[in-house]
Length: 190
Image (tube, rainbow, N blue to C red; front, side, top):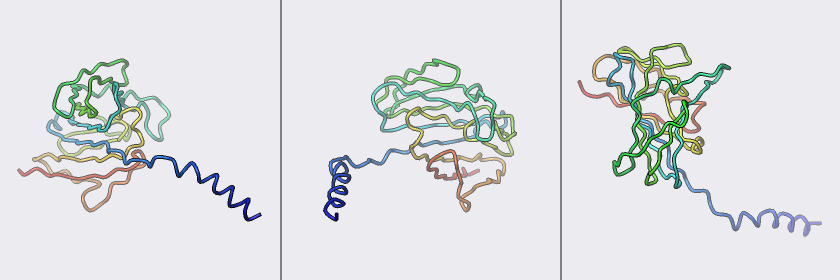
């Protein structure tokens, strides 16, 4: 009886002995700046690294947690650009209204866009000279196939104005949408 249990356990463990260990995945890095907040704009840089060969599909969410209606968040995204790790401009096409295809990368895509936000309603984004109310699905573009990667979000706060962050350096950001999210705050000198 003991021998049978040992043999069964050994057979179950055998595939683990020959499997490859899971490699850590490069986090998706987001940098949000507000150089034109007075006009309800944020400039967002999303860096996707360690990509497999082939085109990268970048998307904006079409729904938001707790909402049952479709929201076309991509309609508030414009001035889209992409480069590789060496700064070479990449071809960006728009196959549908919800996303972009980036071709010709070297394993890294730096995807830059402007987000318009004038609706502080909990579903969309609201940006002005006093604050930024950002709903993550309406704000951050994601790459198909990389949804489970950890993410790092950095906020570059405006020089002028006094934005009191809801989540600042002394309060960790809690996120149910991003699997792993760390934040950092940078206040530029006046």
